[in-house]
Length: 305
Image: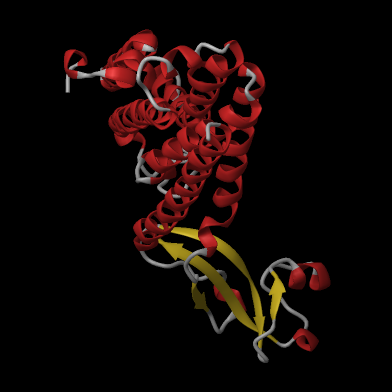
């Protein structure tokens, strides 16, 4: 839908924030150009790999992963501050309400625009990240389970961006001060991301491998996996920390008989758990976004009866 076909509050919203809307595709284009240039440079015979083992590409993609984690916070802060709280703080929203526009239409226009921009920009930037990560896939800090790659390679990044928009719509109305609303929205969105990031690998039960001989060491599953816990197991099934035998005997692979250690155990998530975990986390985040959005419209109805 072009700007010319937009009417009422949606047209006004697009006009108000057209610079920010143009900045998003510009950021995507610039990111893609940088990633392609770094990939070409790193793969050339005289490229960075011969001079720097880590390479500029690895450093750039590491920062890109961090930037993608901050994207939901930035989008939410923009919605809470410049889009909503600033108009409430200055009183300019009253002008929109005098132009045959209802409060619900005013807020809906802002949320719709922000949500569309959030989905498009997050999906595009995640695509650029995929292009840059290809030569680094599976290496240190670029595994499917690492923070950054985990979010960018799945659906949770888009969900978190929508959560930021919904939280921004709610906080912007409650705080009604531009800078304060931006700070609170970033804090709330970041807190949700941190909590879910800490518990995401508890959504599905781990798989366990064991050995019956201590000298064989920790068992390793086939294929790519995320190790969650490892240690020693006794004949009764009790689990002990992996350093227990060494602390008592001072020798690797030698356990005192009174410990009755029979082998090792390893708890892990296989790569096959990636998409189910993504689906569960995405559903949780979208449910939280829906609750925040419902609360935002409830606040709007309360203040504009």
